[in-house]
Image (cartoon, rainbow, N blue to C red):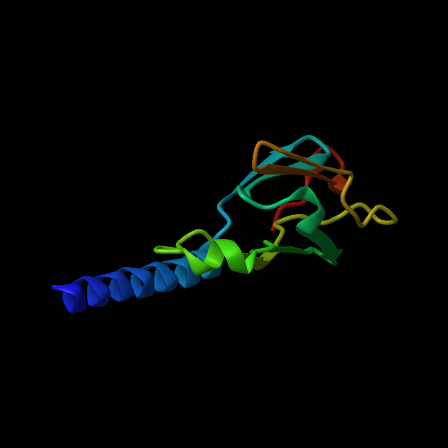
Length: 130
């Protein structure tokens, strides 16, 4: 019976690893809101420390990178590991950025949610959305 338990434990661990790899590929979930002269993004990044999240904006491509520190002590007793350890996502923003203000207006990380505000360019009364 010990062999069957050991094989089941290994199978659960492998399923967890594949799930984590899938989540690292598709996550994080993002909501975007366009309001007057700004674009607001809400990005779920639970389990990451604020210091481990890096943002960059190149044109209208927002890059989000996050990496979780994992201690070997915790990893040694791990049975299942589905939560993502790294995030490396590039998002094409559907806006024109304000000239001279090509950057993030504000970024706040609270309760596992990253809120980013980016100024957008106006054309008359309309906002340019691609």
